Image (cartoon, rainbow, N blue to C red; front, top):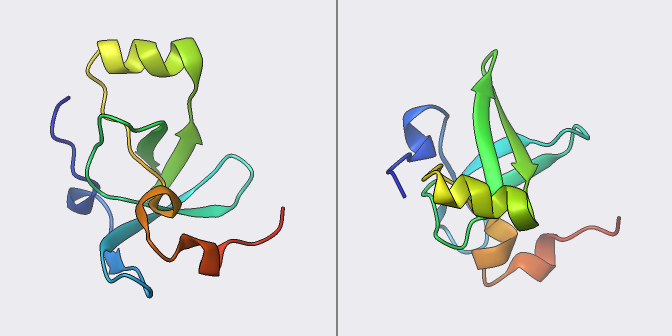
Amino acid sequence: MPSANLTMITPVEHCRSCGRPIVWAETAAGKRIPLDPEPSERGNVTASLHTGVLHAGVVRGPQRDGLRAAHQPLYLSHFTTCPDADTWRTNR
């Protein structure tokens, strides 16, 4: 998977719980989602910059597999990797 570190295109913050770097993206529903800035082999989130806003979309199944096969970078929600994620989750 190519290196496509999101820190090159958007400001980096640090998780208030674990201190690891994160970037914020916006979903199609207009919600903010924290992403780990490095691509991951386990990733299932696309990220693209449009008009200065980082947009994220979750991909599953064949779409995810196709992007991986095409060596497109995929990212993980920081909720997946943060040891304190449950502290920040909200009810949907």
